[in-house]
Image (tube, rainbow, N blue to C red; front, side, top):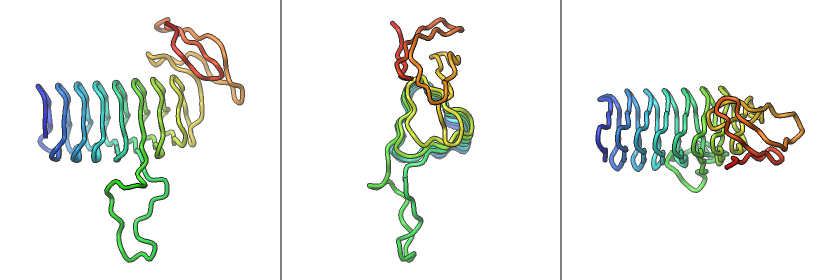
Length: 208
């Protein structure tokens, strides 16, 4: 394990060899971090969370309690993952060989799909994230959502399966609810922080 200045690792945490933890990060009780994982600076990993082989996590991320981050997941800077969220990485998993004579290994292989959570995104409590997805910049996934498709930048999605509910600002404020079946185009202004955005058929870009 390689740790930089002022890193706090609870004595009950299991941190395997070849793990990098950035400066001022905190690893709380009963966390398990597998070999090859990389955590940035100023991160918090809540109790009883699991971070699998070779997972990369950016700076200033909040990972709450009982989060399961499997192999194949990359988390960019400034992401929040709320309690009891589960990532998945195999679209058609089996426990055994087809004749049921042998247990299949759990290590990453050719069926392991890659998921990326882009910078600034928030995932609500108790979400399930399907394999091979991209969650866009500053997107927000509502609590208990089941995510089965990619999420665009600044989109708020809810439900099981998750669908578009509205558009959110960098600061987290809901700026507009989406209209069912009617893609929106126009201009948005955040009532909280006054940042501006342009929307073209639900695709959101920041105004400079």
